[in-house]
Image (cartoon, rainbow, N blue to C red):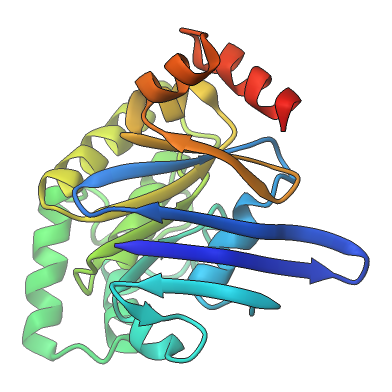
Length: 239
């Protein structure tokens, strides 16, 4: 479970995150929905320790990200929109490298690699070098390395950005399986259709502030709009 309370972050005169508070529960996919520049990525970067908040709290399974960052990071898998794959390494080698960074045991590393190759349908690319991988193949490698230590919480920044329709469907299928395994999944997106199709709960964020959190039905009821895009526009105008 991920909990955020009064999170604030500024860059000189720009307030990127302004008192953000929300929760993301286990066994659910929670979406941060907002335009580019709304504060989504900054919030996620604070959660996984890349940035330090000016004030507020961020908790991962009860662990304070600010005071115990390494302990919190052990409970998180992170997939960002920056793939950063080494073209000379195979898919299998990428996963193994991240497993070693996590200080996993050798026998456990091999077991998890084999498991992830099957789960993410990577058998055809497992021993190919990353050079020449399609966007979908890169995504699978990035997702597998974020999951290699079997974290309870998965944080994803624009996970389907630039993917084709079939690969996007594959990502959705994988995330739904993780949800059934009682994982906590927090993702950001500015794509209404993606949030609507994937998320159990939606957090609407604009200008660094959380304007509303709830299920799709709850947002529709509060705004009197059945369409998520219309509901989003009404929420952000009022905010």
